[in-house]
Amino acid sequence: MRILFLGDVVGRSGRQAVIDHASTIRSALGVDLLIVNGENAASGFGITPKICESFYAAGVDILTTGNHIWDQREILGWIDQDQRLVRPINFPPAPPAAAPPWRPCPTAAAWW
Image 1 (cartoon, rainbow, N blue to C red):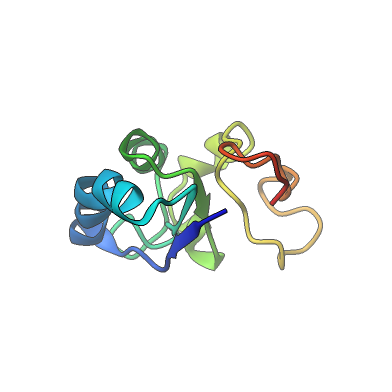
Image 2: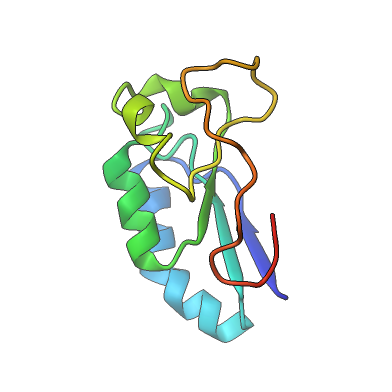
């Protein structure tokens, strides 16, 4: 399995680079699983549901996060529904979103 992790995509220019080139990079490198750290995708302050959807539409399989995920309020109602958005595992047991951090991999017969 070939996994590509793009770390810390920041702001509009970072998002656009991923959106514009994800498909080409996947094909060229034979990527099976594309993971993006999106915690700073909203101008360096969190991520929004709209940004998540744009990444998924471009071919991103999983979005990772960190402490900045909570900077955008609309993500609070979204994170429990989004099976591909991983909340920080090093948070206390009851952060604003309590979705389990481990889920089936969407593109491979494996667990991540």
